[in-house]
Image (cartoon, rainbow, N blue to C red):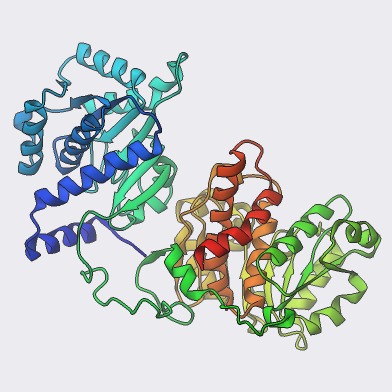
Length: 524
């Protein structure tokens, strides 16, 4: 699925109108979808405060307020400008409907009105941000700034009920839908309901930190359209490996299903790949076991785990299905495997540096590599990554990537897609830049963003599981880039599944690994 700019979204809306779909129908669909999403996200909601601007985004809010009211939710609407300032005829028409239904409406024209808004927000289960839409740029002043301050800060004062959920319409007010820039005052959304396609700005820092959970929903714009001029057959594999893809792509289940390897009836364990994991050290045995276990749970036929000889016997007792070997046996096992995952829990030292560099420079072991953690820390010159023409996937967090790229973490975070893509092209690797909205960048200028994850996944060992998962998919026949795109999505979905079953508090890496087979089955 493409991620698009505000101008592209406007062209889509214009295209729909040219086809004969009235703009008011699009607004109706948008508001209805926002309301239905709000009711789904906030179970047993009894009250809502809807804050609307004077443009089309405000019109979507008027429609959403009507549907919330129809669902039995006590709904109050707050308008930031006078009715005479409303620019959209469709919005004005929907406001007229609200008034005829006697849904409470307050124009924020005084401090008393702002006090009323504060009280309504604090009493509500749902707070709907329909202030500014995808056309917003610049700074926010006046009542809009004060209203956003109340949206962001009022929940801290609530003691006698669960805090309200903030849901933004299309984009959190104060963020730029195209660039990801943010005003000094922005709505801090829990959920953003965006229309037809994800907006590029929602996936970029700093706007991404305000968006919360992003839900993309259709509003009735047909396909094919200017964004998708040609619709491929349902069974066709999307063009990923080796193809230069225009724009930024957002991974979804349909895409992953199309590129996942199929398992034939007459298969055997050799069919599904042999993965060699080189990981672990004294005190970090768990990282090695988690990586290997994730590879097995992702469908590998055989996983060999090489650890320092000093901990081999301990690791062997922790791994029933994994073949455990020592570092002395790395070379012979590497010759027999399809892919090598290396790095989790290895620790640092001259011997580790020598091991990593020898694998990268070896002319005999031309294997696909997944490099994580201490394998990345051992690289002093990234040019070594392109020395042998190997299919290499690196999975750094921002700090590791900043060191490799010679930049600060702050610089990387401000342009995650740009830096990841330039590094991937320059050094001929696939970059999996971890974090909120993990970026997957390929050497042929492909950029994918993984939209699924949750804060509960910020836990020790979760990255080790991702390393094993990606390596497993490569061993099953996927290219490094395809495996990185599919693997990050499956990893995020498994995290969401685990969180839904066990809760977000105390979720651990092994929970996610146990959920990987169920996740894959639900996708394929």
